[in-house]
Image (cartoon, rainbow, N blue to C red; front, side, top):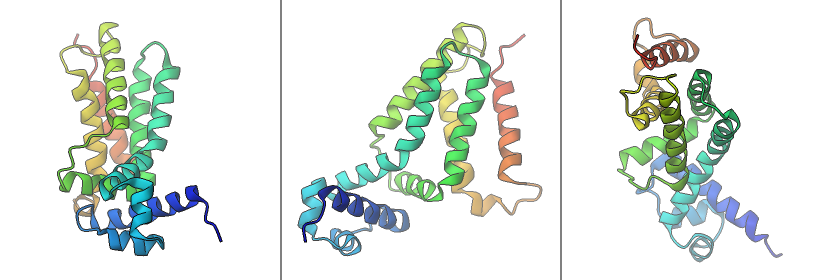
Length: 196
């Protein structure tokens, strides 16, 4: 029986995603990957070249759906308006909320000091910062804030909300995901309004 190479590649990626989410990149061995995917180590090398390239492929696949949605939002927006920034924050928050395994994958990336930002991540941050810059030039957002810091603020806040949820969910008065998002949007967006 001949196996479909694309199905084999997908099975390896799915096995990699499960193991990386559970144990992190550095703790997973090629033998574990091969056993979990039901393939040989040489087949993993054939499809990905190395464990590092498999790790990169898993991260990109996890982020791809959000990337595509967010880039489409930016491209369809045309002229900057205040509503798009709030919609972008909510889209990222909802993506993380719906994908707890992606949150864990991001957490492992941070814990292991993975500095490979990834092409998709850099493209999206660059496009978002450019949108903020244009909104600043049109007077829609305050212009004394670094546009990349605006994007970083909402990305880091949303990511941290889900990464540390087991810790802060017990704080008195913390409330639900929706209550936090509503308050964060209010604080974040009002803080970016031009000064009068």
